[in-house]
Length: 265
Image 1 (tube, one colour):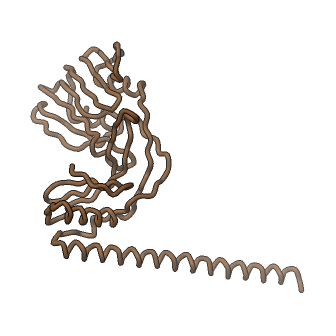
Image 2 (cartoon, helix red, strand yellow; image 1 turned 90 degrees about the horizontal axis):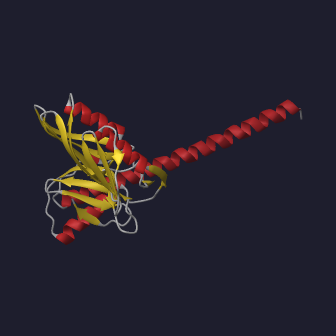
Image 3 (cartoon, helix red, strand yellow; image 1 turned 120 degrees about the vertical axis):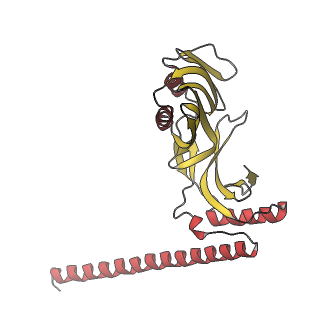
């Protein structure tokens, strides 16, 4: 048998093997899709039986469970203080508190992330100033309650599009001057690895079980968001826990992605 003919036979065999493997892959994906569709249909039926309105469009197309690590970063804290106070100088610190003074006032940041500043800093446009500050330090702009240079602007710490729900920062203005900052300041976050956890369907089932046991009565789920909660303790001052936030017509609830435990906002 000629060498060229052998090569052609080998090529045909390889093509057939690849086609078979592709068929298996597509079949598996189709089965997974069908299985997921059945789970979603069962979920919608469960909500309907419990008298709670739920739109399946609230379910995310993709889910991202990340393990994020963070460590206190004094250089980043100083950069944040300088952005508020002008050139900031670190003063005597103790008890896990970093204190800074500058041209416009003073600022303190605690080991658990709590930040406070009292100052008097004129700005041209309070909302633009706030948005730029948030962008620089990883915060997502949430709300503005400003009228003629008076009021407040709030942002929330985020990572890869996901919010850290209890890590907000509020800037207060008076006569177009920044007069106060309060909330939570966090360092840069590092992605460690992808982790397994409750998916959206499982989280919603846990929520319905919670409502049945606790007596919570709601009539509509209005939003479903994947994100994090900041948790602090003496052993670990900064730790993030992945959660699902379920917003209803009554209140919002957090479902722990690891344990399924539910807490009210």
